[in-house]
Length: 365
Image 1 (cartoon, one colour):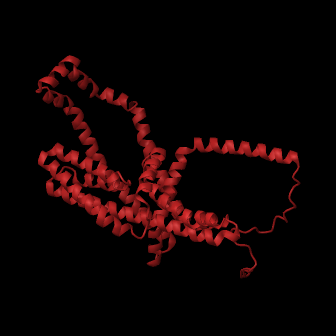
Image 2: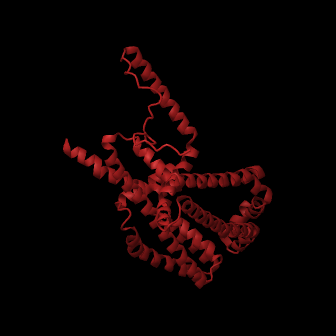
Image 3: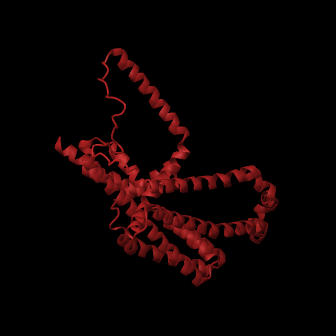
């Protein structure tokens, strides 16, 4: 039996169906109703506050996933433009992200584990080397630093420092759980991105929906462009570091490249942080190598700040330097590294709203 043709008057996804009757007239505004409604409003506000406070950790993960979904959505759109279906495009982007995460973990974990073990084993030896200095030797003898170092470097003390075996396992599995949660949420947000955006615009009154949609799409475009630009700059920084590390024969060049690429995503201070880490490894390897690392990053950061960054970011976000610095510091204080990552696109969005909505309204008064 053939299906009946769809009626043009059928409601859309976000319009009432009319199958549940006609809404009645509004209730009378009696003093009892106003007071009762106000009390319910206060209780509801307090309940929302308590809920947000208790769910702060999960909300941070949701914010991270939303930010990643907005940043990765242009890649999904590009793949769909090449002829891929929506589901396949989301799967390709998600698989690429998973491979990048796995590659970064495989590059970082072995060096960290091996170097930590070597440092613990060699810690008393380092103290013995320092004892060749008379002043340091006097301090070592006076406070018994050698014995304290040996006891602190023992496996039992390290286990207690990590909260025991259960605490260490809880930390590891908690981190894995948070990463998986962000990954799953990001995939869901990417898969239903258009529907979620349409639902958000449907909540706006019809008289203002078109203007809100234009501004909202511009904000999403800027956030996505910033994400793509930041990832591009980070990859260039990591690739340059990898080539340099191979040239001067630094240990674990790929791991150092991953560290520089990840830290370069942090606005304002990330590039300097990555340079300090690589320079410390260089000085630990050899003094000339450490000096070469410092010289390399001084030159590279000038090239990145004045050539690479303006060329890549000129079409994404344009934020005042002072506002970007203040936003990064405020983001770090509120949400840590995540706050620093979303600080600049958030300021760009607020800047657009201020220019297009707030200031014209103030001028018209």
